[in-house]
Length: 519
Ligand code: ME8
Image (cartoon, rainbow, N blue to C red; front, side, top):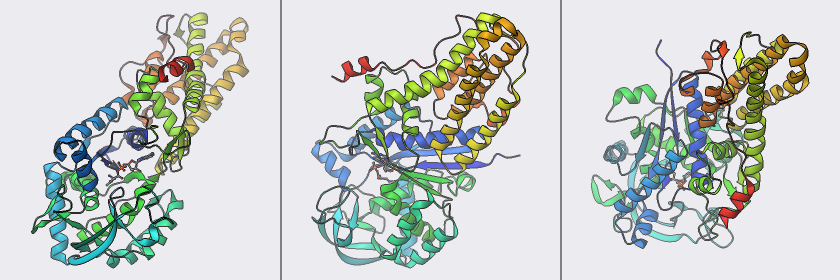
């Protein structure tokens, strides 16, 4: 039977600044979801990349005294390096300056011109370079500034091409109402339905004179294509809409676009209208996540509180990004705003990864070595724990069906808590003196729970999960293990551990090291 496909995308980041943990948050969540669906046997395609055109990037390159393309090459490399550090296992990193992408954007624009959905008209409006869009006076704050970027938008008077967005607003509203899982979390759908009421046609080009760093309108070299049209189109270029029809038909429609709440309007209104106009099937869902603050404050260059994966890894002397991935995925329910602080980070990962998960494995294996020479001879598992393991697998799958990453992780932690309680209640150290059979059953049962926990947590903490898996006596990579394998994948009989093979899978973060380093 052919594998079912699963196509997932992230927003593509503007390369006017360097990657920070806000960008990383989204890429990590998407990576976790992609890895989970691979564990369910799906043929996953994971697209991420960078958004490289527009006035914002043109200005940043000019400030740095270099050509925009060179600036984009440098910065997109920094993003790629950051995603490598964060173990983001994407299938393609698309750049909007890639030749195949530029071709698709021009094709789409000309298609819509031909269909009459794009027309030329003159326009005066207020343009926010930060948002890369025109804002209506209603959207400004009391000082006449963009509420997100806190800057006054620039008045722009131009003859531009317009897209008939208003023509599609009823169809979009109907689609949202008919498909409750189209916008996730569902609570955000109303906000979009309200915004739709005020939707007017949008300008989809700028004069080359004002924005030179853009893709040309093929039939009018004095105009450049609007950066959001350019950017959103990446989702169809990425799976070969023009160059590889077979791939496109295989992966499209996209299963989920993972994006930040600030750009939901562009995805659930502009993008959807654009696809409707092109006659391309709509994505199945759009998941809008919340924003990450640092010490409850918005990250900004001027405040100097921008944190990257790299800074955190250096500060806490981390070998890999697992702890950061774990923290970011659990700091707040995925979909809501979350916060990073050093204190919360340390206490969360010390409690969950070092104590709850790591210590349980460590002390169980140590007892196995002490009482049984590290050998398993009787594989009898506690029936209640086994039932809980199976229920946890189903619960985790159900949570991931709605991309509820945080709640899925919580289910696994509840399982690990239950195993910790089981050990404490059964006291295998006492059973070792009175009932060796029962003692072995307890230890084996806990190790089986660790098998389930490691596979279920692998999408979030791939390195730690691999260490657990190896210490349980399994050979090879945990990466290829499917959830469906869990029932048949059993811890082997015989020697699985010795004193030398046991080591902590996650070392507690030392607060003193971190403090000194930050200074
Ligand atoms: O919006 N916390 O690019 P971008 C969580 N190029 N997420 C954050 C964040 C934070 N502090 N800061 C940014 C763009 N993000 C466009 C997207 S898609 C076709 C074009 C998220 O670099 C943000 O919400 O401003 C967005 O989803 C992504 O990072 C890129 O933001």
